[in-house]
Image 1 (cartoon, rainbow, N blue to C red):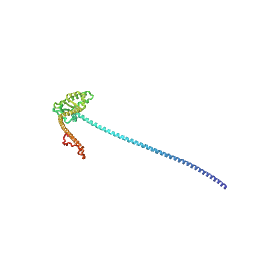
Image 2 (tube, rainbow, N blue to C red):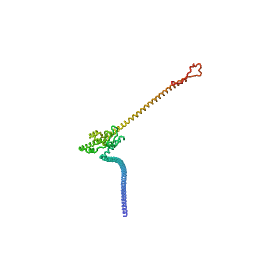
Image 3 (cartoon, helix red, strand yellow):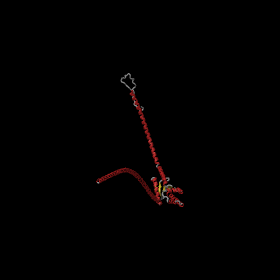
Image 4 (cartoon, rainbow, N blue to C red):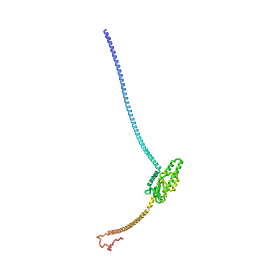
Length: 374
């Protein structure tokens, strides 16, 4: 029984050991399989990690390249924007400078317009006052006369023998004699004529008044400033406005003809300048005629001096001719002396020549003094 128990126990132990061995083998197999699976899984994980690393490297490189590209593009864009802003700033500055210059020109022009407006207002004030208008005409007349004629040819504010005071007196020789220039003119009626505009009735009335005022002034000049024996037979009426002069000659011919009959010549600044230049030529011609006798006397004296000079040149020519003759005679004498000297040199006397071989003695030569003919 004990043996059976032992046998059973041994069998049980054997079975247990077998089961344990089988269990250990199974566990080992499972462990190996799990290990292999773990190794395979770790290998796959490593491959995945390596792949991820490669992808990360590639992604990092792509990101870096993209970053560089983006930076380059941003730099280029920034440079273009900077250049564009700089150019735009320069153009804006130039435009502002041009604008400032134009504004300065406009401001200067505005200032000139303001000054001109003030001057026009002042001129209108002057022309609206008869006394001031006369002074204005006298000033303009003074400028024209003093700029054209010498001081001795004119005089301002001269009192004539009839007691009338002339604005300017041109001192011309007789004929024609001194000429008076009057610088006053009727402006009110002319201004009314201009202001009439298209109103025919007002225009006709203003025209009649203007013509009458001018005629009245022409008659006054003729009576006051044409003085027989003191002034010329004519006088000048100076209009310091070209517009008034043009209106008068264009639309009021009868007034101009009346001034001709009264021997009052109406002049404007332009025609007065031409008249003054003619006066200057007349004065110059008059002075030349005054100096003609002096010129003739000087020419006569010069002709006498020329005669004396011609006589003295003739005397000098005679002396030169005599000197030439004397030099010719001296030359003739020197030529004769030279030829005779040559003849003497040609004589050859030798000591060994016998006396009997000598030619018979000729007559003794006689010495004579060389005269003028030799």
